Image (cartoon, rainbow, N blue to C red; front, top):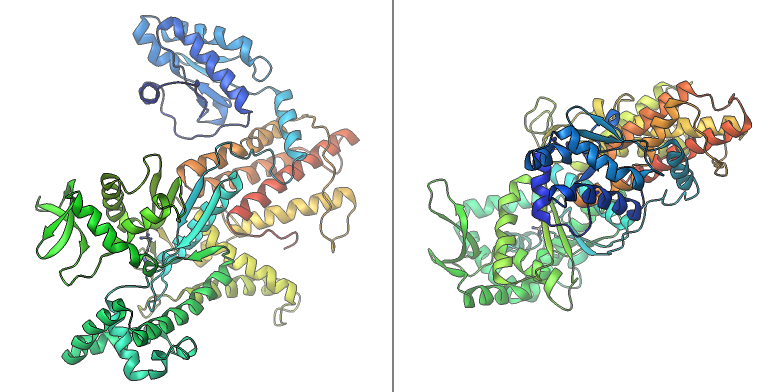
Length: 623
Ligand code: ARG
């Protein structure tokens, strides 16, 4: 945000409340130096009023300009002046500083100051982007952080469900954005691979798959469908008392490191891993490191000891629990956060406390500055309590930020539970295959011979479109809202969808090919960056949008809402369409204007390619 340097946080909040509501945070690209200068000037201009704090913020609407300063509205009250006079004073202070960048400020309404980039400044900025095709002038962050992103995290021997799909897609995108900004990102898969249910599973394997208990053979035993296996084990557990007793003993054996129990557990993990990998391959997820709950076993006793020493953990109905201020049950009684069960087993929260220490505190851990947890919103309270307890216990350095990144539910088209027609849970593999199948059918129906097999290269494109559609549909929603899963909508060519964006990209490729006489079959050669000359209002609007890119990315880096990327992509392609309608590329008035417009095509295409890449979707040059 554009604000004076060395300014107190509290004041900023106050200022924002006084000013008109800032709904969107869109900030065109300027160097940090320029931003600081303008912010300082606004602050200085406001100093005579006794407040060293006039915020300049991104304009909430394009017709308000590129920036706005609403400080006069709040200041006026304090100094007994009209907001308009107050605004005039601030403008006087701003004018000499912003002269090279902005037009003469406009005072709108009672005292809002609107700031608008100069044409020359826009030309220069977008030209800079054209010269930097890799980063499009997006700076690498100055304060590089170590960031752990905990995402995907399915549970062994259970179905990976659509919530895990969301976590995987959102977590991957956030990791990509943070990495592109220049941070050191560690992607951790906190797989649920430990817990009491493994006693029951191990004992079931002992009876049904004896080879799984042998270390030599355990990894290669065909356990069949794991969900069926889990159901069978559970059924025995519920019906058969002897089996129940054995299962309880099985957990103890496993925890004690019994070789057979461990081998059986390993075979379950190995079989699950094969299943997960199929999904990760289909989604093209890379660099996700498995660091399951079992990894933290050695640290659990230490967590309890330290909590007890500080008297944070206390006995509660035979179990051990942490009580935190402000957390109560519905009836008002204090809500325990369980860290050790009455049978000595540990809880979900205990592992997460150990994981925090390992990720932030321990020397041989990640020493992360920021840890993100991408899970469904249903776990919000769990994370709130875990974070609060960890802070209280001093399990992490004070500067570290722990952030839960919650997301809503995926619902069926009828708004009810997302399930197959017969009411079963949807298998992720089937879901992704179905999206690809529909995309393929669509492509085939538009070919000369709709019955014929698609050529391999077209099949690849179909996969990109189908999987891309699923990803984009998810990422384009505000992650905190629930959304209705609809193949029809996500595969539609109209609206904010992957197919729309992929077509938009391919279309620009076509425009550039045609204007430069390139053959269809080869990959596009992007023209050399040219001097930008704005000749039409549609160009101005497109460029005003393009130069916002760095700020859109830093917004996602801070607020972690991937839909901001999709919204921006959609806006950009709409601006491009208006530009292309108004300004001919091929028949431009002069060669200079043609070259300038080709550069705008190149920067727009580069923006789409970059952002789609961050969303985990590869663009194609022909569809
Ligand atoms: N396995 C959990 C689930 O399926 C998600 C784990 C999230 N990460 C964590 N550190 N608790 O809901």
